Length: 246
Ligand code: FPP
Image (cartoon, rainbow, N blue to C red):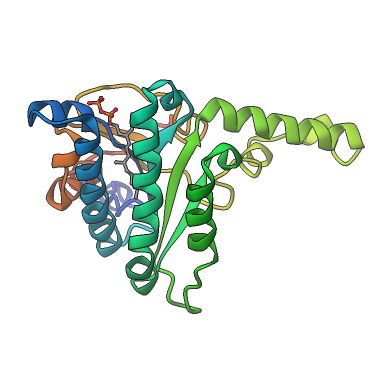
């Protein structure tokens, strides 16, 4: 192979197959508008809609959004209830459009302790069928999710396999651990976007983000739109991914 062939041009980095997003800044945006925090979350749903459409058009196969973390229960009850009914309503109102566009909704997190109405919306979305060959993108909605919860669950499951005698401790590999996570069967995200200027992972996909490119923007989530998502994809394409190699 010649020197030239060996050098992969930076622009050849393809579109990421999996993009994860920490949607942050709804509350601050609402405050800036002189409104209550829920007003920001409502506009946040509009941003989700636009970003989902743009991601599917760009050829992204998996989009994972952090909609509610296990830590978010610590917010005032009124805000928590508001977010829960907003998400339950958005799942139902978007379901036909998403299904028609070949976008499947998948939910990751400790779903059993979510309010009943939200669990019913989740059930409807999970049972919606996308015709054979028409699946374009999977939208993972992280709800009552945290990476430490997920890793604890995976560890427990693996421990049970060992205890039953179905698994030798020597057989525990990174691949086996990945297969016990909520994202099993999916590629790890190549790109993580976080809005609102915060530069933290906040207990999101800690295992899966090991080699992920991080993209931070000061834009508050309700103002994040398709053009800005495209800009994040372009920034990703400029990066050279080495995975610890030279
Ligand atoms: C963070 O802003 C955002 C959230 C806690 C997520 C709120 C939920 C949505 C946008 C709806 C998701 C929609 C669907 C369809 C799943 P923040 O409240 O932390 O803002 P702040 O940091 O400015 O206070």
